[in-house]
Length: 164
Image (cartoon, rainbow, N blue to C red; front, side, top):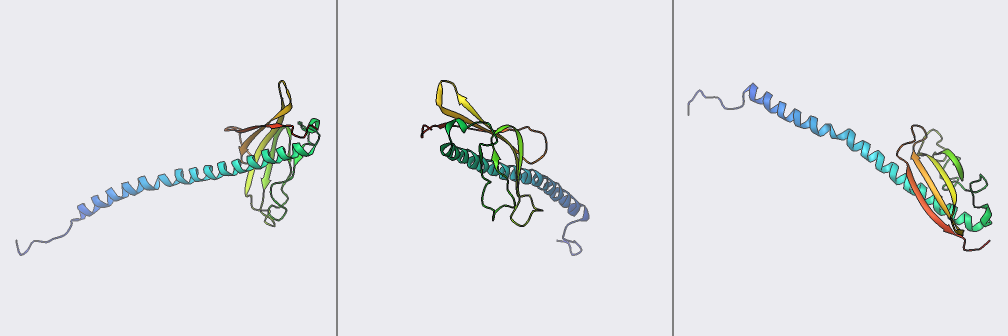
């Protein structure tokens, strides 16, 4: 070894190493917006699924409480708001009938925060040849505003157990 030899990296080597690390970090950071968008969509899908379960089960229960002829697409066929008055600030009832309706859930005493918002259409259909069965179809869209694309469709059939 030479006595005057210097060990270490040159400025060019350090700059190239930083360039390689920088390009790698840019690739990693570009994944964050996609990850947060997928997280938001998965939360929406979960909320829509829970809302649909509540609506279909609520209307199934309501169908057992009223006359079978009253199980129809009228605003009289409705279920109470999701949750209690202590959970949501003025949550509206869910109503049957054609036409898209918006529903917004805001935490109790925090009316400036929108926890969940959907647009839905809940319809009741008679099943051909089966006067004792009705079909419930629930269409749900995420958000309170926007284009109605990406419909989430939920379907169930309800049998008239009480023969009312």
